[in-house]
Image (cartoon, rainbow, N blue to C red; front, side, top):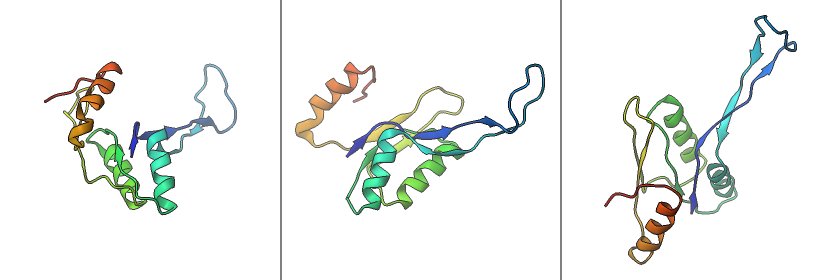
Length: 117
């Protein structure tokens, strides 16, 4: 199981160097990123059964990241994502083995997460 970030890696580089005070054309490619997501995808591609617990926005980028991650063989079926339009938050609903629930809740709260019942 991987728990962590799913996000795009974006790197911009000027095409012909930087000139102060001028428009500087650049190439700005993006790729799938987030350490937990990257590890989960690579393990799945190697044949491991992997579950990813993460959160993404309900937007084009978030949907594309989840599609690509699932296509790589990562199990996302126990994850539900809600995102309020224009809101700086996401909600991830995960299924947890009852014996681990209290420990997981304490660990998440210690890292600043708000856990809802």
